[in-house]
Picture 1: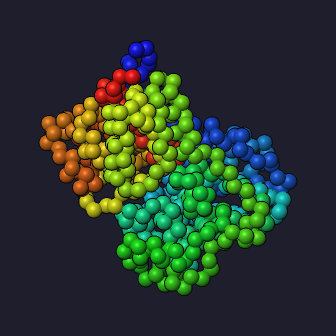
Picture 2: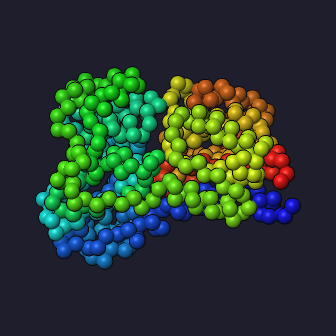
Picture 3: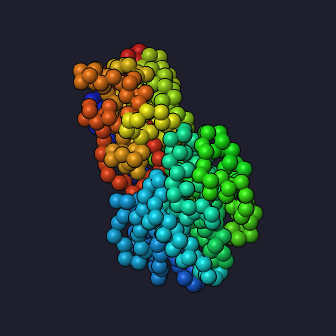
Length: 433
């Protein structure tokens, strides 16, 4: 048997290298310069929202050949120093007054422009919460209450953003409509499965195919009783979001400059270089613990039968799982996934894993994610930790924190959502070929 890098590479080192490759493929410095449009005859107004907004604004400043002004809003601690584009920080995932004020200012900036002017809109994941301008009759507290309920409900991102669009005065195409007749060019970093521009940050500059009736149905589906102001607003169903074919959005141009698939492809290339067969599962949705069971099954199939690839192999997936919160523990989607994966693999030898949020923040905690090793359950048991009990309490954070296996990166200033990787080494038991 020929010896290659896979025989000697430390799994933890490989896991970190794959994550760094994924991030490097989707940061603004890498993706944005080539996507910038030609300068207009008139003014250039740069606006934006999301966890990548500050990094994107800085790249625009560094590469834009003419004058510009602008304002973008990003999550607290995700800012960068800029000179011409103001960066405002606000709360995520539950909106606050800073986000509301920023949204008001952004909406005002794009009004009164002409067809000779350009609105360059920089959008990335997190923009739904950061660009928080409630619709008339809906208070910020109302929006906060609905956001908290949706986050705990298990609703997927498309469902959450459908509701958000119909409680907003700026999302769901309303921002682009306000900018008419200026030319609107939107550059998007996708954090949603399928890369649907109308879902990314609730689509402030693209037509919205969903309706007030859809929003009402989603709240009913998850048993969410909204505040009276929200219920009344959704029931009235007035001032529907701009739909496909709306003339105010006819000239808007939208380009997705970075996607979850870009991150997975970059990681797959590094895995291949190091002698591992990459198996890319793509964007995935569903309950984190259910997705973990599927990943465990595929990893065992590789270990036992060499299918769909022989070991050494690397499983890669992205997308956005959900967590229906029933316990009182701490933890985001990625540690929930890893804890469920640990239970499903039950200490299977030769299988290591990691799961991270590419923005550097798993849920609302301070970690990007965590690492899982074959001895994770044994080390936990030695500390008196019950993995199944922690999973039932949605306490992945507490579990991996006690083991010292959380990974803290700080803000990455990009966001293509979750990045999951499972390394299946030859030691996992794959029959020799």
